[in-house]
Image (cartoon, rainbow, N blue to C red):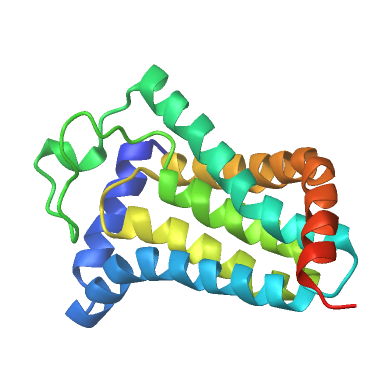
Length: 187
């Protein structure tokens, strides 16, 4: 089955759903990112008195997400795949402007990267954050701004690169956490 057909099937189905679901899908993608930010805050609070490496992982997580996003942006500039919504397709969301490339989906990279790095820091969250990230990624096809392969590639990039980058920098962050604790925590 070709990517265009799957895209049109999903977008066609999406248009038959209730308008409240359209709003939820559009707002939910960005709102989910705020949920991840809040969870990083809670994870940092939980790890504040844990071993320094635990807090360093929480701090390194968002850095890993940012680095995965940068890789995604670089890929977009090289691949330059046009958005599927440019072909006069009726979609839920407005089509981003020309030059805002489709492959890979940055929302998917960020959502999957945030979920994966949160799992590094707080494994018990996996049951919630991984499905949330997958739902956020799928919503990009549902609202019509990405092909399914855009979100799949973005999801894999975020899922692999963000925790990898976080683990690469955690060694540098851990001594900084120890130093901050000696200055901030009463003895």
